[in-house]
Amino acid sequence: MLSELPLFPVGASTIAPQVDALYLFMVGLALFFSVLIAGLIVYFAIRYRRRAPDEIGVAATGGLILETAWSVIPLVIVLFIFVWGAAVFFAMARPPADTLTIYVVGKQWMWKFQHAAGQQEINELHVPVGRPVKILMTSQDVIHDLFVPAFRVKADVLPGRYTTLWFEATRTGQYRLFCAEYCGTKHSGMTGWVYVMEPHEYQAWLAGGVTGSLASSGEKLFQDLACNTCHLPDTQGRGPMLHNLFGSTVLLATGEKVVADESYLRESILTPRARLTAGFEPLMPTFQGLVSEEDVLQLVEYIKTLKK
Ligand code: CUA
Image (cartoon, rainbow, N blue to C red; front, side, top):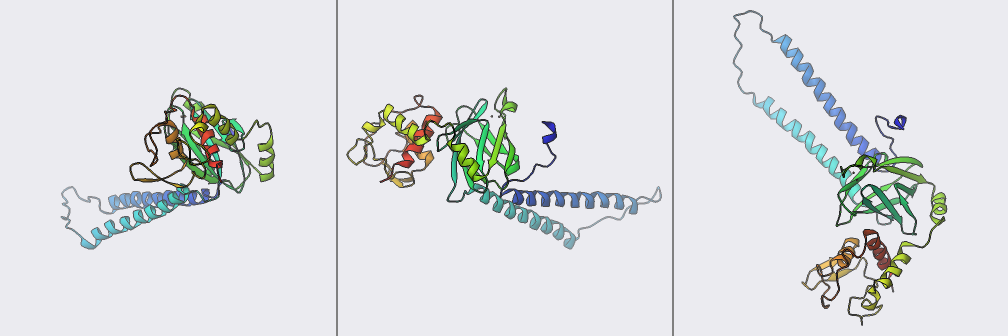
Protein backbone atom coordinates (compact mmCIF):
# COMPACT_ATOMS: atom_id res chain seq x y z
CA MET A 1 0.00 0.00 0.00
CA LEU A 2 1.15 3.52 -0.69
CA SER A 3 1.44 4.50 2.95
CA GLU A 4 4.23 1.93 3.16
CA LEU A 5 6.38 3.72 0.61
CA PRO A 6 8.33 6.14 2.77
CA LEU A 7 10.80 8.65 1.38
CA PHE A 8 13.62 6.88 3.16
CA PRO A 9 13.26 3.14 3.80
CA VAL A 10 13.73 1.75 7.30
CA GLY A 11 17.10 0.16 7.95
CA ALA A 12 16.84 -3.46 9.06
CA SER A 13 20.22 -5.05 8.39
CA THR A 14 23.75 -4.79 9.77
CA ILE A 15 24.97 -3.13 6.58
CA ALA A 16 22.18 -0.52 6.48
CA PRO A 17 23.77 2.00 8.90
CA GLN A 18 27.02 1.86 6.92
CA VAL A 19 25.26 2.49 3.61
CA ASP A 20 23.16 5.27 5.16
CA ALA A 21 26.19 7.00 6.68
CA LEU A 22 27.97 7.09 3.33
CA TYR A 23 24.82 8.19 1.53
CA LEU A 24 24.05 10.97 4.01
CA PHE A 25 27.66 12.13 3.92
CA MET A 26 27.47 12.44 0.13
CA VAL A 27 24.12 14.20 0.24
CA GLY A 28 25.48 16.58 2.91
CA LEU A 29 28.59 17.25 0.84
CA ALA A 30 26.52 17.95 -2.27
CA LEU A 31 24.26 20.29 -0.29
CA PHE A 32 27.25 22.11 1.22
CA PHE A 33 28.89 22.76 -2.15
CA SER A 34 25.58 23.58 -3.87
CA VAL A 35 24.82 26.25 -1.26
CA LEU A 36 28.41 27.52 -1.26
CA ILE A 37 28.67 27.77 -5.06
CA ALA A 38 25.18 29.17 -5.63
CA GLY A 39 25.75 31.65 -2.79
CA LEU A 40 29.09 32.79 -4.23
CA ILE A 41 27.56 33.21 -7.69
CA VAL A 42 24.93 35.55 -6.27
CA TYR A 43 27.42 37.34 -4.02
CA PHE A 44 30.00 37.89 -6.79
CA ALA A 45 27.33 38.97 -9.29
CA ILE A 46 26.34 41.75 -6.90
CA ARG A 47 29.76 42.57 -5.51
CA TYR A 48 31.52 42.83 -8.88
CA ARG A 49 28.65 44.12 -10.98
CA ARG A 50 29.30 46.74 -13.68
CA ARG A 51 28.67 50.12 -12.05
CA ALA A 52 29.00 52.42 -15.03
CA PRO A 53 28.16 51.74 -18.71
CA ASP A 54 31.75 52.41 -19.86
CA GLU A 55 33.46 50.43 -17.08
CA ILE A 56 36.00 47.83 -18.26
CA GLY A 57 36.91 44.88 -16.07
CA VAL A 58 40.46 44.15 -14.90
CA ALA A 59 42.09 41.27 -16.85
CA ALA A 60 42.46 38.25 -14.57
CA THR A 61 45.69 36.25 -14.55
CA GLY A 62 46.38 32.86 -12.95
CA GLY A 63 46.52 32.38 -9.21
CA LEU A 64 48.69 29.35 -8.44
CA ILE A 65 47.64 28.86 -4.82
CA LEU A 66 43.95 29.18 -5.64
CA GLU A 67 44.14 26.80 -8.63
CA THR A 68 46.13 24.22 -6.67
CA ALA A 69 43.65 24.42 -3.81
CA TRP A 70 40.59 23.90 -5.98
CA SER A 71 42.24 20.86 -7.60
CA VAL A 72 43.72 19.20 -4.52
CA ILE A 73 40.78 19.66 -2.12
CA PRO A 74 38.23 17.98 -4.44
CA LEU A 75 40.76 15.21 -5.18
CA VAL A 76 41.14 14.48 -1.48
CA ILE A 77 37.36 14.53 -1.02
CA VAL A 78 36.59 12.13 -3.89
CA LEU A 79 39.39 9.76 -2.88
CA PHE A 80 37.99 9.78 0.64
CA ILE A 81 34.57 8.84 -0.77
CA PHE A 82 36.17 6.16 -2.94
CA VAL A 83 37.98 4.50 -0.03
CA TRP A 84 34.91 4.69 2.18
CA GLY A 85 32.67 3.33 -0.60
CA ALA A 86 35.11 0.50 -1.35
CA ALA A 87 35.15 -0.48 2.34
CA VAL A 88 31.33 -0.71 2.39
CA PHE A 89 31.35 -2.55 -0.93
CA PHE A 90 33.82 -5.15 0.36
CA ALA A 91 31.73 -5.66 3.49
CA MET A 92 28.70 -6.30 1.26
CA ALA A 93 30.57 -8.51 -1.20
CA ARG A 94 32.14 -10.85 1.34
CA PRO A 95 29.70 -13.00 3.29
CA PRO A 96 30.89 -14.16 6.73
CA ALA A 97 32.07 -17.77 6.95
CA ASP A 98 29.05 -19.23 8.70
CA THR A 99 25.96 -18.25 6.76
CA LEU A 100 22.56 -19.75 6.22
CA THR A 101 22.37 -20.37 2.47
CA ILE A 102 19.07 -19.88 0.68
CA TYR A 103 18.68 -20.38 -3.06
CA VAL A 104 16.66 -18.26 -5.44
CA VAL A 105 15.77 -18.74 -9.08
CA GLY A 106 14.43 -15.67 -10.85
CA LYS A 107 12.12 -16.22 -13.78
CA GLN A 108 9.69 -14.12 -15.75
CA TRP A 109 8.06 -12.99 -13.47
CA MET A 110 8.55 -14.45 -10.07
CA TRP A 111 11.09 -15.23 -7.39
CA LYS A 112 11.35 -18.85 -6.33
CA PHE A 113 13.20 -19.29 -3.05
CA GLN A 114 14.36 -22.66 -1.77
CA HIS A 115 15.60 -23.42 1.72
CA ALA A 116 18.05 -26.26 2.32
CA ALA A 117 15.52 -27.94 4.59
CA GLY A 118 13.17 -28.22 1.62
CA GLN A 119 10.82 -25.29 2.06
CA GLN A 120 9.98 -23.59 -1.20
CA GLU A 121 8.29 -20.23 -1.51
CA ILE A 122 7.33 -17.86 -4.28
CA ASN A 123 7.73 -14.09 -3.92
CA GLU A 124 8.15 -14.56 -0.19
CA LEU A 125 11.31 -15.10 1.77
CA HIS A 126 11.39 -16.11 5.43
CA VAL A 127 14.65 -15.54 7.28
CA PRO A 128 15.72 -15.56 10.92
CA VAL A 129 16.80 -12.33 12.61
CA GLY A 130 20.40 -11.92 13.75
CA ARG A 131 21.90 -14.56 11.49
CA PRO A 132 23.93 -13.92 8.32
CA VAL A 133 22.00 -15.18 5.30
CA LYS A 134 23.60 -15.81 1.93
CA ILE A 135 21.35 -15.88 -1.11
CA LEU A 136 22.72 -17.90 -4.01
CA MET A 137 20.96 -16.62 -7.09
CA THR A 138 20.46 -17.57 -10.71
CA SER A 139 17.94 -16.86 -13.43
CA GLN A 140 16.08 -19.21 -15.69
CA ASP A 141 15.65 -16.66 -18.49
CA VAL A 142 16.74 -13.01 -18.55
CA ILE A 143 18.63 -10.74 -16.16
CA HIS A 144 16.73 -9.88 -13.00
CA ASP A 145 17.97 -8.05 -9.92
CA LEU A 146 17.09 -8.77 -6.31
CA PHE A 147 16.65 -5.65 -4.24
CA VAL A 148 15.64 -5.35 -0.57
CA PRO A 149 15.67 -1.62 0.25
CA ALA A 150 15.37 -2.13 4.02
CA PHE A 151 18.53 -4.27 3.96
CA ARG A 152 20.32 -1.91 1.51
CA VAL A 153 21.32 -4.89 -0.62
CA LYS A 154 20.86 -5.33 -4.34
CA ALA A 155 22.49 -7.64 -6.87
CA ASP A 156 21.97 -8.79 -10.43
CA VAL A 157 20.54 -12.25 -10.98
CA LEU A 158 22.00 -13.65 -14.17
CA PRO A 159 21.10 -16.58 -16.40
CA GLY A 160 23.90 -19.10 -16.75
CA ARG A 161 25.76 -18.33 -13.55
CA TYR A 162 25.49 -17.95 -9.80
CA THR A 163 25.73 -14.67 -8.00
CA THR A 164 25.43 -14.12 -4.27
CA LEU A 165 24.15 -11.50 -1.90
CA TRP A 166 24.25 -11.60 1.87
CA PHE A 167 22.66 -9.75 4.75
CA GLU A 168 22.00 -10.06 8.44
CA ALA A 169 18.60 -8.78 9.44
CA THR A 170 18.58 -6.79 12.68
CA ARG A 171 14.86 -6.45 13.35
CA THR A 172 11.88 -8.65 12.81
CA GLY A 173 9.16 -7.52 10.47
CA GLN A 174 7.99 -7.53 6.92
CA TYR A 175 10.02 -5.82 4.23
CA ARG A 176 9.54 -5.27 0.51
CA LEU A 177 11.65 -7.03 -2.09
CA PHE A 178 11.79 -5.91 -5.68
CA CYS A 179 13.16 -6.86 -9.07
CA ALA A 180 15.35 -3.90 -9.98
CA GLU A 181 16.22 -4.80 -13.57
CA TYR A 182 13.74 -4.31 -16.38
CA CYS A 183 12.98 -7.89 -17.40
CA GLY A 184 9.86 -7.70 -19.54
CA THR A 185 6.17 -6.88 -19.47
CA LYS A 186 5.48 -7.79 -15.85
CA HIS A 187 8.77 -6.59 -14.40
CA SER A 188 6.95 -4.16 -12.13
CA GLY A 189 4.93 -7.02 -10.68
CA MET A 190 8.00 -9.07 -9.82
CA THR A 191 7.92 -8.07 -6.18
CA GLY A 192 7.49 -9.79 -2.87
CA TRP A 193 8.07 -9.69 0.86
CA VAL A 194 10.85 -10.68 3.17
CA TYR A 195 9.64 -11.91 6.56
CA VAL A 196 12.23 -11.57 9.30
CA MET A 197 11.36 -13.88 12.16
CA GLU A 198 12.69 -14.80 15.60
CA PRO A 199 14.97 -17.87 15.25
CA HIS A 200 12.52 -20.20 17.00
CA GLU A 201 9.68 -18.95 14.78
CA TYR A 202 11.84 -19.54 11.75
CA GLN A 203 12.56 -23.11 12.88
CA ALA A 204 8.87 -23.72 13.38
CA TRP A 205 8.12 -22.26 9.98
CA LEU A 206 10.80 -24.43 8.35
CA ALA A 207 9.30 -27.55 9.86
CA GLY A 208 5.83 -26.94 8.43
CA GLY A 209 4.64 -28.68 5.26
CA VAL A 210 7.93 -29.94 3.92
CA THR A 211 8.15 -32.98 1.69
CA GLY A 212 11.92 -33.42 1.95
CA SER A 213 15.13 -31.49 2.10
CA LEU A 214 16.74 -30.01 -0.98
CA ALA A 215 19.56 -32.53 -0.63
CA SER A 216 17.19 -35.49 -0.46
CA SER A 217 15.40 -34.29 -3.61
CA GLY A 218 18.85 -33.97 -5.16
CA GLU A 219 19.75 -37.50 -4.13
CA LYS A 220 16.65 -38.86 -5.82
CA LEU A 221 17.45 -36.87 -8.95
CA PHE A 222 21.03 -38.14 -8.80
CA GLN A 223 19.66 -41.68 -9.08
CA ASP A 224 16.93 -40.88 -11.60
CA LEU A 225 19.48 -39.31 -13.93
CA ALA A 226 21.79 -42.30 -13.34
CA CYS A 227 24.61 -40.03 -12.14
CA ASN A 228 25.33 -42.72 -9.55
CA THR A 229 26.37 -45.26 -12.19
CA CYS A 230 29.55 -43.30 -12.98
CA HIS A 231 30.10 -41.25 -9.82
CA LEU A 232 30.68 -44.03 -7.33
CA PRO A 233 31.36 -43.47 -3.63
CA ASP A 234 34.91 -44.76 -4.23
CA THR A 235 37.56 -44.04 -6.86
CA GLN A 236 36.53 -46.96 -9.09
CA GLY A 237 33.91 -45.00 -11.07
CA ARG A 238 34.21 -43.72 -14.63
CA GLY A 239 33.56 -40.25 -13.26
CA PRO A 240 35.29 -38.47 -10.38
CA MET A 241 34.27 -39.41 -6.87
CA LEU A 242 32.05 -36.66 -5.49
CA HIS A 243 32.64 -37.27 -1.78
CA ASN A 244 34.42 -34.36 -0.13
CA LEU A 245 34.45 -32.61 -3.50
CA PHE A 246 32.63 -29.43 -2.47
CA GLY A 247 35.06 -26.76 -1.36
CA SER A 248 38.11 -28.79 -2.38
CA THR A 249 40.63 -27.87 -5.07
CA VAL A 250 40.31 -29.87 -8.29
CA LEU A 251 43.16 -30.47 -10.73
CA LEU A 252 41.89 -30.08 -14.28
CA ALA A 253 43.03 -31.92 -17.42
CA THR A 254 44.59 -28.65 -18.56
CA GLY A 255 46.80 -28.56 -15.46
CA GLU A 256 44.82 -25.66 -13.98
CA LYS A 257 43.33 -25.82 -10.51
CA VAL A 258 39.83 -24.77 -9.57
CA VAL A 259 37.92 -24.63 -6.30
CA ALA A 260 34.81 -26.80 -6.49
CA ASP A 261 32.26 -24.17 -5.50
CA GLU A 262 28.60 -23.99 -6.49
CA SER A 263 29.41 -22.38 -9.84
CA TYR A 264 31.90 -25.11 -10.73
CA LEU A 265 29.42 -27.87 -9.83
CA ARG A 266 26.71 -26.21 -11.89
CA GLU A 267 29.01 -25.85 -14.89
CA SER A 268 30.15 -29.45 -14.59
CA ILE A 269 26.55 -30.67 -14.68
CA LEU A 270 25.51 -28.50 -17.62
CA THR A 271 28.74 -28.45 -19.66
CA PRO A 272 30.89 -31.26 -18.26
CA ARG A 273 33.65 -30.82 -20.82
CA ALA A 274 34.27 -27.17 -20.04
CA ARG A 275 36.59 -27.93 -17.12
CA LEU A 276 37.40 -31.62 -17.17
CA THR A 277 38.98 -33.21 -14.09
CA ALA A 278 42.51 -34.51 -14.71
CA GLY A 279 42.65 -38.24 -15.31
CA PHE A 280 39.11 -38.64 -16.65
CA GLU A 281 37.76 -39.13 -20.17
CA PRO A 282 35.18 -36.64 -21.48
CA LEU A 283 32.45 -39.26 -21.25
CA MET A 284 29.79 -37.35 -19.37
CA PRO A 285 26.91 -36.07 -21.51
CA THR A 286 25.63 -32.56 -21.03
CA PHE A 287 22.53 -32.17 -18.90
CA GLN A 288 21.68 -28.82 -20.48
CA GLY A 289 17.95 -28.81 -21.21
CA LEU A 290 17.38 -31.99 -19.21
CA VAL A 291 17.49 -30.34 -15.81
CA SER A 292 16.02 -27.02 -14.67
CA GLU A 293 17.95 -24.51 -12.56
CA GLU A 294 16.02 -25.78 -9.55
CA ASP A 295 17.09 -29.35 -10.32
CA VAL A 296 20.71 -28.16 -10.55
CA LEU A 297 20.40 -26.50 -7.13
CA GLN A 298 19.06 -29.75 -5.66
CA LEU A 299 21.95 -31.70 -7.16
CA VAL A 300 24.46 -29.13 -5.88
CA GLU A 301 22.95 -29.27 -2.41
CA TYR A 302 23.12 -33.09 -2.50
CA ILE A 303 26.76 -33.07 -3.61
CA LYS A 304 27.54 -30.72 -0.71
CA THR A 305 26.29 -33.36 1.72
CA LEU A 306 28.58 -36.11 0.33
CA LYS A 307 31.26 -36.40 2.96
CA LYS A 308 33.30 -39.25 4.30
CU1 CUA B 1 12.68 -9.51 -13.02
CU2 CUA B 1 12.54 -7.17 -13.51
